[in-house]
Length: 64
Image (tube, rainbow, N blue to C red; front, top):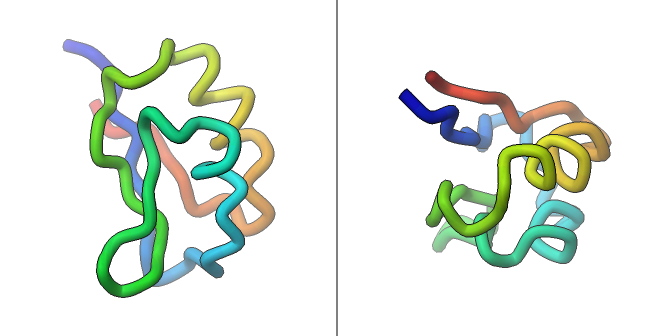
């Protein structure tokens, strides 16, 4: 089973870093917080290094 990135929207500060770095996976939802809309939009390694590892509030996690 593949890993799926998940954004804890209660913790998200809407900085947009994950969206800028990995736009094929993340976007802003209607409430202005980041969300994962396509977990297959980038390799797991890129999601980890360019979104999860750089999130200033560590609100992006893997769901398996």
